[in-house]
Amino acid sequence: MKKLIEQLRVEDWVVVWVSIPLLLLAALIPADLPSVPSTLVGEVAWYNIAFLFAIVLVVLYVGCLLLRRPLKGLLPSLVVVFAVSLLAQVVAKIPAVSYYGFESVFFSVLFGLLIRNVWRVPAWMKPAIQGEFFIKIGVVCLGATILFSDVMKSGVFGLVQACLVVAVVWFFAFWLSRRMKVDERSAMILSSGVSICGVSACITAARVAGGDDKKLSYIVSLVLIVVVPMIYLMPWLANLILPHLFAPEVAEEVAGAWIGGTIDTTSGVAASSMIVGEVANQHAVIIKAAQNVLIGVVAFFIALYLSTRGEKGSQAPSLGIVWEKFPKFIIGFVAASLVFSLCQSNGLFTLSAKGKLLEPGVAKMFSTVFFSLAFVCIGLDTRLKDIISKENRNVLWSFLAAQTFNIVVTFVIACLLFGLLKPMLG
Image 1 (tube, rainbow, N blue to C red):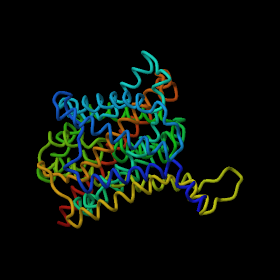
Image 2 (cartoon, rainbow, N blue to C red; image 1 turned 30 degrees about the horizontal axis):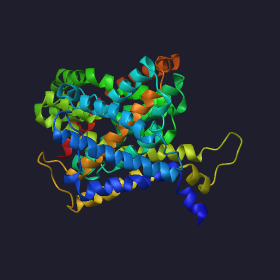
Image 3 (cartoon, helix red, strand yellow; image 1 turned 90 degrees about the vertical axis):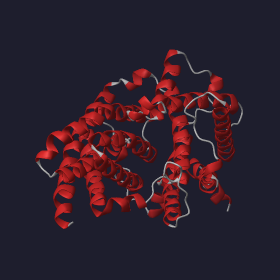
């Protein structure tokens, strides 16, 4: 019994235990929970900030207690880390910024890097710099936003496209990255980001594969920077090519499927597809949601591959060793997705004033908060010369080549499924 308790006190399990109360709060009292304010002005904004800080503080203290980490100095350190992450989230909510798909994690890394490289990180700031811990909590909470109903909305054609695009693009990106001398784990992060859904997929793959956080922050930054020109490039290509191939209503549907399968952030997909039209927007967002569901599938297979791989010359590991190496927080991610999907299918969730489900929205807010905290920590731990290294230049060219391949392959698949097969069978 004592051995079992010790096994359940490792970080992978502890992040699941501290995430459960967060998800219960999201499911039971979503309307009473705070949200990240879009401004720092006013009593309501500061009430929400204080409430969120209290939640994060409790989670961090309980986590450190369970992991037997020192508690001394956590409070002042967390105040600074939280303040920087809050600033990043507020900046990301500025309409002009959010329109281009720049998420809070980008600014979190940027602000952390500025502090680390322009000034310095004093010893008293270090206790709360626990990026790994924060990221894993964010991943578990992210699971509650992955609803299986989103796959059903896209129908069989959307599901087939999501599976084909993710499989083909992932393996090509991985193969190309390895040929470009990118290390295996960074190649897995890059492949997941290009093929599935950008930031969330990168973060989840990084935690499963155990990649370097400095490489993760670099790849996430690449994803968010490349999204900006693609928001305008994809509608231009769609309007240039598709009207010559299909009838107007079919062309717009194909454009939505193409944009939804290639642009790596949900906000970027929404902004880009609206340039084409309402029909394109509807299909693009649904296709994107269908791909998002595959985060857990890809993470599972990455974990399975890494955990079953033995050392050179050794025998294949047993199921027990596979279980021992398997990242347990992915179980929390999958469980959260299953539970929230079941609740949604049974009509237990409520719609917000904007017509979106309230409970998964709160879980998404928690995920964003902890991801932002984690990337502040990554920035505070990273020197700029590590980011502009020769190896990262290989990551850049691999990413750009894989994204170009993604655009071409998704175009072919979208044309076949939504341009030819769907009208034929419909």
